[in-house]
Length: 169
Ligand code: SF4
Ligand code: SF4
Image 1: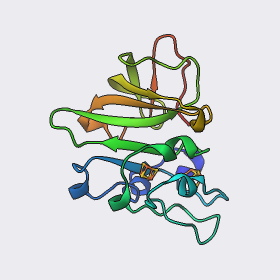
Image 2: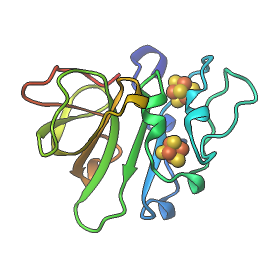
Image 3: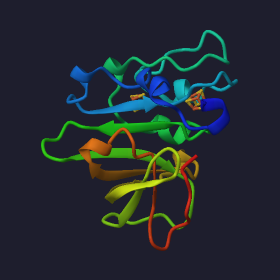
């Protein structure tokens, strides 16, 4: 199903989610990369070793969530736009989702957005909380969205008035 649709299924995703007991610790990466391709910038970009060294360049990334600080550097480094950071640590009904964005214009902090799932379907509304686009990110901006907590592991793209419609992949 993943190969034909390009959309990962629950069985694929279970492998890249951190353990339930770790989720309240802070922002933690989700590496949604499931196909063997010759690519490893996620590992070389990660400053903590949370994305381990590849024995073979075609390996699927191995993540140690215990080492992840949620910095988001790997989001911009991934050419497949397959990495996200989810922060479920704050109390209340809101979680934060950081994702890659390669369209112009960039949204501004405070912009209300339509939240899209992995298939590009709208599933709710959220707000831009942070926009990072430093030179070292090489034109892949990292946008952090405030989303309803129950959608934290569903939201993987967004759309906003004045922005270019896309499905984030
Ligand atoms: S968010 Fe930061 S610490 Fe975590 S895997 Fe990515 S680069 Fe490494
Ligand atoms: S950089 Fe992205 S596409 Fe390449 S191996 Fe890492 S997660 Fe997969």
